[in-house]
Image (cartoon, rainbow, N blue to C red; front, top):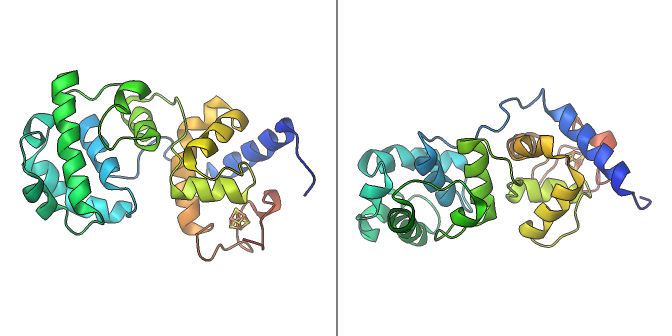
Length: 218
Ligand code: SF4
C-alpha cells in the first residue's frame, strides 16, 4: 500500500467509523454494568485481561457489599478477592480496588474526579480506564480508550504502527476528528467481537473490508 497522507488516512478512518455507527449504536455507553462513576471505575479496573461478561458476573455482589469508596476502602483484600476470584489476577485487582477507594477517600472526598491527571493518580488506573470513566460517566471525551480490540483494529487498519496502546492512542487522536472520539471504543470493541477478532477475522464478510489494508491478510 502506498504511503498515505494524514488527510487521506483521516478520510479512511472516518469512513470506517461512519459505516460502523449504525451497526453498533449506543455512542459512548460503556459495555460494563455500573450504577455511577465509582462503580464504573471499579468495573473497568477489574476488566484488565478479562472479558466484560466475566466482570459483569462478579460486580453485582461486589457493589452490593461495597457500593461506595467509603465502604470499599475498609474492606480486606481477602474478602474482596473471594468475591472476584473468578477473574484473572484477582488478588492484584482486589488490592488495587481497595487502594483506589482509599485514595479516592483521602484525596477526593470519596468522589470520582473528572480530569485525566487526577484519575490516573489513582492506583491501577491508566489512560484506558480514565478515558472510559471520563467518557461514559461524565461525557468528557478527552481521548480514546485503547484496549486490546481498539489496538488490534487500529493496527490492522494501519492507523498506527505503535507497539503500545498509549502511543497508539496518540496516533489515533491525530487522525480521528474529536467529534468521533467518544464512540470509537464501544464501536470497535463490538466490531472486534463480531468481525475483526484476534484469532480469526472474518474479512470476507467485514463491512469495512474495502477500507482495510489488512483485508484477507490479518
Ligand atoms: S477486513 Fe479483516 S482485518 Fe480488516 S477490519 Fe475487517 S475483519 Fe479486520
